[in-house]
Length: 153
Image 1 (cartoon, helix red, strand yellow):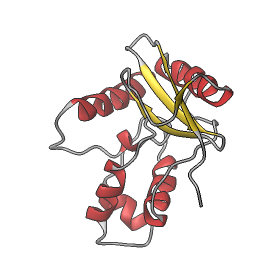
Image 2 (cartoon, one colour):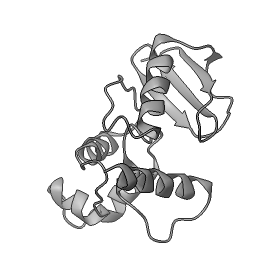
Image 3 (cartoon, helix red, strand yellow):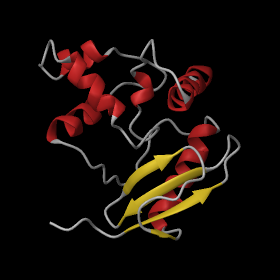
């Protein structure tokens, strides 16, 4: 099956630019920076809605997202991301706890790999599954998202 046509657009936020890529089915990727992504550079209803909801989230006025998603991933990744979405705002879980909730004890490493493949933070809130030794820009962003939630909780 052919991948649906995608568009992307960069929006200004109080925390810097955010680029959102979407297909006709939903948001497919979020980058906390200005980026050239797959597809055509153009704002759409879906990217605009996602940007508005992310702005509200960053301002502490939104705790959950209802924008449609088009997350590309394996069946296992999709299952992990769905379980991660059930973690309450401002709370954390470990990869082992997610594995246990999926009735797959001992698969915490696979859960961690699925979490690292998430391209939809903060909509899929993998920042609620913190990794102790994570480094780099992405890790800094994820820690900031969790800190933001804990401040507004």
